[in-house]
Image 1: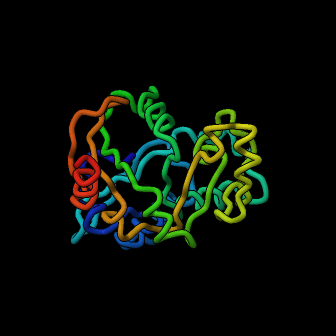
Image 2: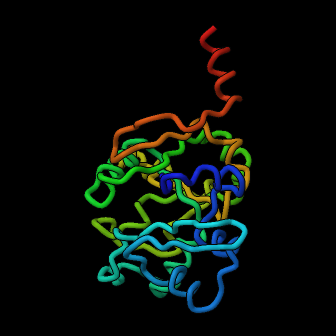
Length: 214
């Protein structure tokens, strides 16, 4: 789930975390501090003479009144932790639910469908898994650095017995996925939780699908 019109930038520069995007746009000092280590109730637009305009998404579900749920680190450290990762939903149902939420249901977005096997094969060492929506405090309980575990350390079977389909809620990649076009199956424009049109399809995956159909 990305800001509408983000795909050309993602295709050119990769899918970047907030921290990686701030590095690319050469943001420093107080402006960066406010974006990277504080709660963002609204999206923030940043500018660069070469890269143009980018939108850093809001953190509405991370309402600051719930900082008491952060354990083992300060709220500022937790925001930095999140802003250093690129996040993917493990299940389509959670994406659809978020896009249909009140804050987003009237807004169009770019939605990327990713080949998980391809992504993990190329970025396994940078991947962590989370059993909760780490960017929302509603009903998810305590969180901190312990929320994110490497694939080999993740208690999948234990989580599957308790939560079935939600054994893994999030997959996160550290800092950036620079080779994002290699793992994206398709990009669509959605409004709310309704897909409107296909923006781009990966030729390699199209050929594979055609071969399977034949």
